[in-house]
Length: 148
Image (cartoon, rainbow, N blue to C red; front, side, top):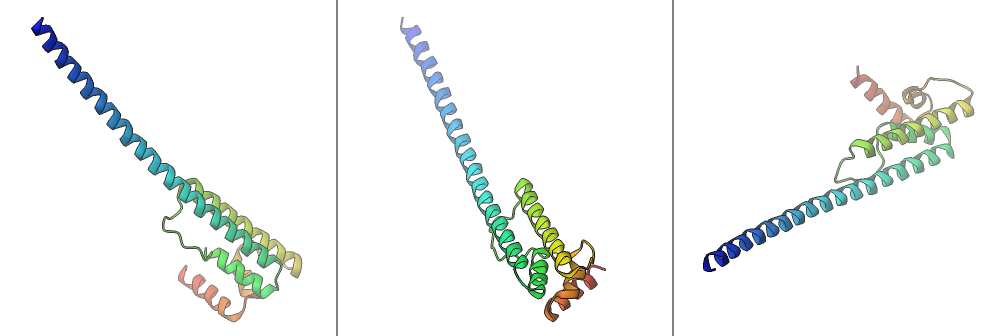
């Protein structure tokens, strides 16, 4: 009887140790999942800020004169949204922001076509060089020169 109670106590200790290990593993995994959820929430928050800024720039461009519209077009093309993000967007969030930015650029170029009756193509550069103020024309020339 004494031997069987020692065996039972030893087996109980092993079962308790296994259960404690499983609980600790679960807690660690839960903390990791929570950290991933927090990172995803933060990325979505910045994604929404970017998209909101893009829409704001597009709306400002569509309701302004040609010079201001060219400025907004340049800023969108250079991804200057005036938003600081401590974590760069990646994956689906980056794809969505890029798609919205490209859509805004297309809409601004279409608006230029409607306002001017001209077609300078689908790229922002020619529109900026034609209708931007001198500082943005100069910046666009520098960008074109550096990309060659």
